[in-house]
Amino acid sequence: MVLIGIFGVLLRRNLLFMLLSLEIMLNGSALAFV
Image (tube, rainbow, N blue to C red):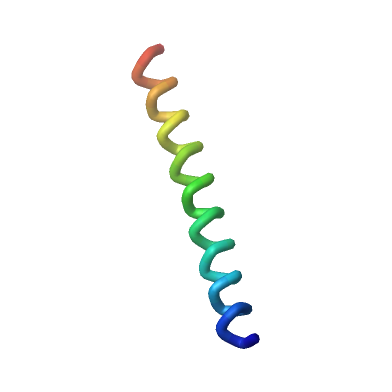
């Protein structure tokens, strides 16, 4: 159970990081096109 909890937290953190990097990439491409 503890392992599942830790795995969930890691997954959530990775998902958050992925969303953040995706947003940064989109902002960067938008700036490049302007």
